[in-house]
Structure formats: structure tokens, C-alpha cells
Amino acid sequence: MVSPYAAKGHKRKKSKSERYDKDSDEEEQNTVFVEEEEEEGTQKKLKAGVTDEEKAEEAAQELAGIPVSLSEQQGSDKNGPGVIFILEKASLEVAKVGKSYQLLNSEDHANFLKKNNRNPAEYRPDISHQAILNILDSPLNKAGKLRALYVRTEKGVLIEIKPHVRIPRTFKRFAGIMLQLLQKLSISAVGKREKLLRVIKNPVTQYLPVNSRKIGFSHSSVKLVDMHDYVASVDKDATLVFVVGAMAHGKIECDYIEDFISISGYPLSAAYCITKITNALERKHGIV
Image (tube, rainbow, N blue to C red; front, top):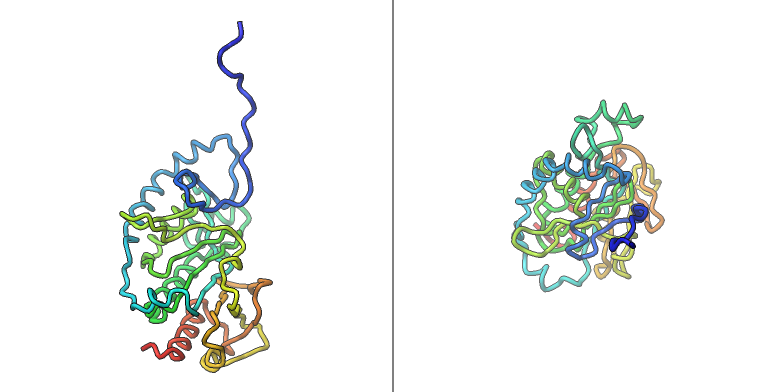
């Protein structure tokens, strides 16, 4: 007699294609990690990470609504020329340390990284944290001039951060938010359907306006400029896209960058580089 149940087949292997938020409730329930895990034992690993997800969920409560008082300009001039920031080569990587998943950083996971033949000096998510805070805290953003903020990790994961989101001030809570984001693919405002942070599909160029001018920054560039003079000479109708490296060492290499400049005779941190950029733009637009 033939069994009424279908015979068990081989398990389908997980797709290793790029994972990103697809604006569906089903996709939000999926989990994404920077390093692919084998299917066997995955459920046990997820259970081990429950505690971290709960902590991240608690940290996400800070992301409710629009916390900064933006001018009416952002609403009335939403599609006009503005500023876009892209942070490249950000160190935001999730791995299982002990019994839980954590956002790797050089201070807390030095031994773990050395055991896995990795250089702890390269794992600096605090650089991204400081850079994001400087962008979102700037009067330039509060005046409604920031159109978008994108972060691309060292592993190629592209993240979109809305200009009106409030990123946690402490690094511990920031790490919890990034952990949840890389697992759930998006984080929505509490009590709302608006997604404040989400993983999106590459490449980043598909989200940039046609008339945008893409500017990269590197201390090694032979083109040393005064940032105030540089932005003053740019057409006001063009959207400026500033590409800044969010890593401890090295140089960003992106084929979409049109102009590579240096804005100081000294090496600058990503956070201070962003401060010089926003200050110059605020002077240009008369933002006090």
C-alpha cells in the first residue's frame, strides 16, 4: 500500500545570494549573518542568540518616531538638491562568540579574533557609530538638507539609515541595534510601519540622483583643497554625495566616485572629516 505521505527528499541548500529587506513581513522574519552558516545546527544557533536579540529589541525602543525637530524645509523641499553621505568599508560583522551572536569589535573580542586568524585592529564598529552620530547630529541634517545616509560594510552589506532616526548614544546599545538589523534586515519605528534602518540591495548608485556629484576623501589624494572653498564653487542645484571611509586604516576604492580630494595636510578620523564637511555646507547654506 502506498503511503499517503510524500517521501522525504533532500534538504534544499541555503541560497548564498545577497540578502536584503524586500518590504514584506515574511522577509523580516528571516535571519541574515555576514558569514553563511551550514544548515545543520542552525536552529540551535538561533536559540543561543535569543538573549542578544532581546537586548537588541530593548535598545530599539529608543527608535520611536521622529526625535529631532526638523524645519519645514525638509517636507517642502524633499526632492530638491541636498546632501547624501555614504560610509564605505564599515566594520559591522556579526559572529557567534561563545553561546551568543555579537557584533565584533577589537576591544571585547580580541582573543576570539586572534584565534580565528583575524586582525583585531580592523574590527572598529565604533568608527561607524561616531560617524553616523556626527552626520545625524549636524545642523545640516536638522535643517533638512540631508537626503540620505548609506553605510556599506566591509563584507558588502548595504544599509540605509533615515535622516530623522535617533541612533543610540552609547556604543553598547548601538551594537545591539546593528546586531538586530543584520539579523532581521530592518528595524521599524515603535508603533509605526516606517522602517528607520534597513538592509537594501546593492549597488548604492541606483539610489543616487542623476545630477549628483560623487566626492571621495583620502589623505593620500594629491588634490588638497579647502573644504569651504570647494563646496562654495559647486553648483547649488547639484546633489552632493560625500563618500567617507569608516575603517581604521586603508583607502576607499569605489569606481563610482568622480572626484577624490584631501581636505587636510594631516590624517583625519572619519568623524572629524564629516565635521569639516558639514561645517562647510552649513556656512554655504547660511545654517547657524
